[in-house]
Length: 483
Ligand code: B12
Ligand code: SF4
Image 1 (tube, rainbow, N blue to C red):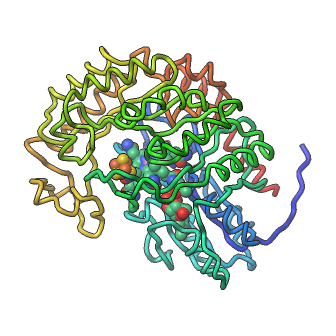
Image 2 (image 1 turned 60 degrees about the vertical axis):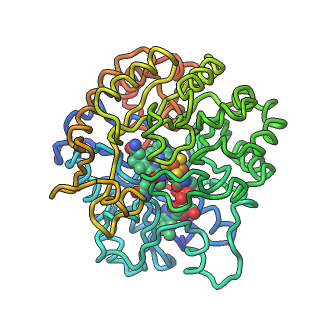
Image 3 (image 1 turned 135 degrees about the horizontal axis):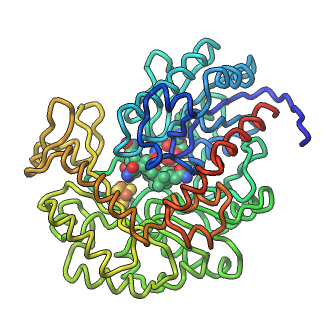
């Protein structure tokens, strides 16, 4: 392999740890006693778009940027070398963009990941370059304040640019063509994330996203720019597999109609989040999404109980809910691999209701149920969602450790139930990876036929047996340091 160094002084360095954000090396696994990793071990990775999107915008403004990914995996010596190489005298800003912790992450894992980010921030601090934390974890920062000059909680393009350049230029999602770059070190066959739009038309009461309840016509990327993004990156990196990061991609009805005309004759694969109620209402999507190339989705159902849905603020909790859902599932057939996202913990449902819903999904659909425990923050400065901000109004209480109690259920017991049902569901033949999670397997070298044809357990086993993840991340490091 030809290795050469271009020696460009980077003006901005953005550190991230692409979702899942918790990749660990074997030394840390031992040191922090991370047990049971074989069940939860992150055998895949998928880039978190936020930092790359900011980098793309800065590069469009002639600012040299290095994104440094997979931060949690590097050891002390590697981190030191990375910082020495990129945080040089040309560097005007260091950005941190960690992803949020997965719900249910163990305390040891959280400690280990926090530790790594703080170590990195401390080493950067010694370089006396301004530091900035942003992205979804900025709402509950796990990097110590003493290492940070600024914290930013919403979209970052304009703010970061304003710190580097005096300009009146403003970022516009509608017109943007997002470009990955050579020094992002994209792997052959890697799936990449892209946005079709920003913001969400719904307003769920447990939601911690800052741009919800938008009008459905707001912040939609021009379909021509979506195509240009696909084509640019296909040409540069051979990318054909894409995850759409929108919270509800099928809310963009006109975008789908428009893209259907062009994409049905191309060979792209897509995955993303869709909602069943919109599929039911706009039934043309049953055919148009697979024809565009959608092969897999994560479908946010949350619950099968109309009262829960009404409390949460989801539109589809009305009459004949299960009948509509079954019809949508039947219409879909085998066209897509789908995970049904369910949340345990919202009243009036109790454990027996969650059990029944899990069984109903298994008996009546081909969906793979994916359960999460309701997640709420107690500390007032960390409260963002409606349930958090007005907990008392809904009868939500918190114990001394910050765990919620609601309508007789506790976070601890609900979590236990979620862990148990996840284990039980993982033995089912239908436990196929879906949505964003499925496309992570492209990045470890599998094709769609193999991903679709195997359970998560089998794929994880193959990756661990062959040390695929480790060799990919080590290869990334070599390319980063040789740049
Ligand atoms: C796609 C997605 C996922 C995908 C990620 C796939 C991937 N390739 O990265 C998957 C399915 C893996 C995922 C998982 C989870 N997710 Co998620 N996810 C999202 C989603 C829908 C989009 C994120 C995205 O990429 N957007 C596109 C980019 C371009 O936009 P952005 O992230 O907003 O980035 C901008 C700003 O944040 C900012 N920014 C980002 N970094 C930086 C850095 C600096 C320095 C600055 C200044 C700014 C900045 O600028 C960026 C450009 O404008 C968001 C909701 C949302 N719409 O944001 C939830 C969201 C981030 N997820 C959330 C959660 C809770 C989770 C889970 C914990 C859920 C779970 N059940 O476990 C897991 C954790 C995963 C893990 N660690 O293993 C929450 C976080 C809540 C919070 N802030 O506390 C969100 C906000 C959803 C919500 N409605 O509440 N997720
Ligand atoms: S939880 Fe998802 S669907 Fe609900 S408002 Fe938030 S982003 Fe939208």
